[in-house]
Structures are given as C-alpha cells and as structure tokens.
Image (tube, rainbow, N blue to C red; front, top):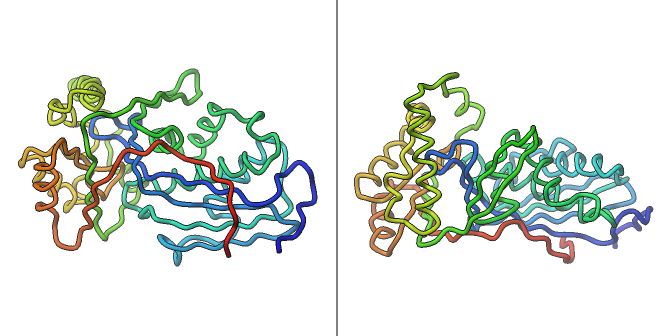
Length: 310
C-alpha cells in the first residue's frame, strides 16, 4: 500500500502515459518534421510521502540511471517547478519498448512522458499548463522540437519557432505505411550533429526548401511524389560515414523504388511504402540481423489513469 500523499495539491494514486516512438527530419525537413509511430513506452508515476523509487523494464533497463538524473524524472521535476510545486517523493515505473539510440525518439518519449505525468499529478495541472506550454517545455528540455511535437500531437507534425516559442501543427498522412529497419548498433544525436557543417550553400538550402514543401504534399495525399520529396542535401550524406550500413540500406531501398530516409539521427532507416509490393520489396532488402517492422501512424501521447503494478 502506498504512503499517503501529504498535500492536497497532488493527485492521489498513479497516472500512466503511453508515449509513441517518433521519426524526425523525414529527409528534407531537418529539425522541423516529425512522424509519430505506433510503438510505445508506457510510464507510470505516483506521488509518495518521501523518497524516489524507479523501476525500468525493457529497453535500456541495464543502462539508464535510477536516480534524479533519469530523463523522465528530470522532465517531471522541470514541470513541477513550472507549476510551482515539488512532490516530497515519487515512484516511477518505465516499461520501455522504443529502442534507444536508434533515431526513434526515445528521449523525446521520456521527456513527453515526464511532462504529461507531472501535469496529471498536480490537481489543477491541466488548467495551469496548456498544450502549448507542454510543447514549449518539452522542446526546451529536448533541445529541438521535431520529435517532441510528433510525440505530443501525433500524426505528421511541422514544428517551428515564433518569437522564441516553439509551435507546431499536425497533419494526417494518407496513403503510406511506415516501414522501420532497426539495426543492433546505436548512434548518438550529439555525434550526428557534430558531423554537420556550420554553413550550407544557397543552392542546397533552396533544394531542401523545395523538397520539404513537396514532402508535405506527398505525405498528405500524393504519395506518388515521395521519391522526389524525400531527397535531402543538408544532413544525410554528411552523416553517412558515421552510419555506413544505414546509408547503404537507404540507397539500396531507393534504387528499388522505395522512398527511404534516415530516421532522425539514425541508425534506423525509415521507408514509406505505398502498397504491399513495396513492403515486400523493402523487407527483402533488409540486412541480416536488422529488425523489420511495418508500422502505423500514432495519434500521439495518451494519458491513462491506472494501477501501478510493482
């Protein structure tokens, strides 16, 4: 039996969030485009009278910190601070299904889970922190908005900064099936960003601007444009030496006529299949040892009120 929550400001009992995997960039939409996928981390938290208890199962169960530096706890503490409260104790359980270090938004899912849980554990949290505030905080904690926007809102998202504040809009993809190719090797966002040049040519910037606009059209109703729309000159080739197997697979899929991109900072490859033939072609191209997963587009993070099983 859980210790009694000492202050009425906090909700009694546990709260659970399901946060989806996400793929960012999608080729030309660097740091702006995101896609929510139907693979979820499930995270449960409740306020205790004292202490900190963390249990992690699944992905990263032997690697992640089990103290205040745990990313979900960090996001919860930041959200509580924004709401002007801090709980005396917390219990957290993370059932992780999103692969870590594969460009599928595991850190964004942790941050979004923490923000959503802290908001839900404060009695008037929803009234004091609206959806725009959640997005702004999650984006600040993550350092860029593409994954957190897709994780929070679901669907296909476009995120941008307006007067220093992160904003995002959601669109619904049509006529595509995301296919994920997940390797056993990890890649780091920091290292992937370090591989990018500080400046790009006007020609390359113009190329990506056109392709990003075309990708919005392709994903929302004209999938026949996806091969051209997923072309990129700003980041994928520049990062290829750090993830040669992923770059090689992406090139192989595109030669087969299957639109494919590096998912986020890699090393996962994301293909946009428009029919069963392309799904089959894509699956046959997978290297030995890689996991192939035919996915769906998620509706975003979901709050569930449930029991905390320990």
